[in-house]
Length: 289
Image (cartoon, rainbow, N blue to C red):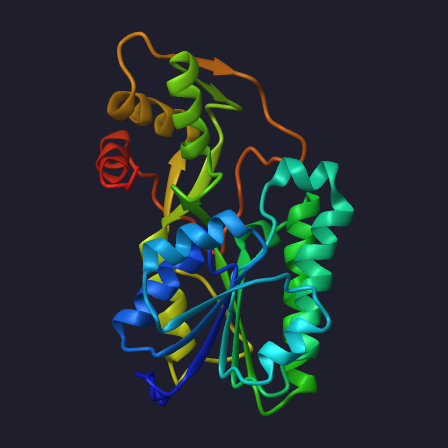
């Protein structure tokens, strides 16, 4: 599967303290990696990840991927980059376009411009880059253009794009928000129960990303989708399944309407069969809440 010696390979995971980053690091450690650097600008998350992972093979660095002094120094000694760091909330992007451009575009460009010594660069993008109608999707699509262009600039290296759907149960996801609302008022707030979304669990997403990164036969012209792990749900079904697992007979649902920039039905490279409420309940019951 891999032409790389994992124990000797030096990895960098941006956003390594986040939900996906932590899962990627855990997989690399299980594979025998000895040289992993994780960078995050959130010191509380960094300390949480450090305690959770608990390995001397991981060097946790507090820093900003937009730092034009730090990143050239870090990247000079890295073989493979997993770029997971990004701002991700659609409605926040509509209100803060400069900050989303700074993190999702300018900081990515800082990484790419200093990656001439990197063998492989895995850019984790989003299904929001398909049929763009909002600021967040725009930043992810522009980021993909930059990654593809860098394949031409540093032709000896390999820059790969992976488009993932929503990460179910990740930090800041709708499930985490609902858990907070449930504990506070025994109700959850729903935008539009008829919305459909694609999703993937964090372990499956991390597994797919690492598989592609270490595959010697990947194609830099291809945008990769984790189709075999992707599921689709109706938001109302997810809410009802959530209440049946975590709520009680008195739990209420409040409908607030779609937020700025949200699609009713998201796009994907290929349609996926709807996941039933019963299957959603099984998936939710296995999440580490």
